[in-house]
Amino acid sequence: MSETTSRIPGALTRYRVMAFVTGSFLLAVTLGVILKYVVGIDQPTFVAITSGIAIVHGWIYVAYLVTTVHLWTLMRWGLGRLVYMGLGGVIPFLSFFAERRVSADVAATLETR
Image (cartoon, rainbow, N blue to C red; front, top):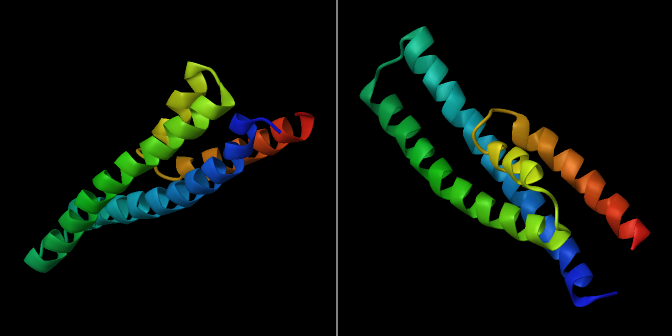
């Protein structure tokens, strides 16, 4: 097993964790936006909490992008895959679907190496 190949499982684990955390925070932000603008909840405490969640999500998204780029670099995938994986942190539910697909692709690639 080459040095690059031996680093892939760890990179995949970090990506999977960050995809789940980022996706969860994105769903919380999305729910907050729906409750504020559709339902009309405009209490100061609610706005402060949802704003805090949105800020935390932004920083978590940065960490998610770092893990995404690291795995993408190790796998030597095309630019389209990087964009798809990166969009997982800004399109609700996409990070969960992307994580499953990426995990399956990495597993298939590692079996052939």
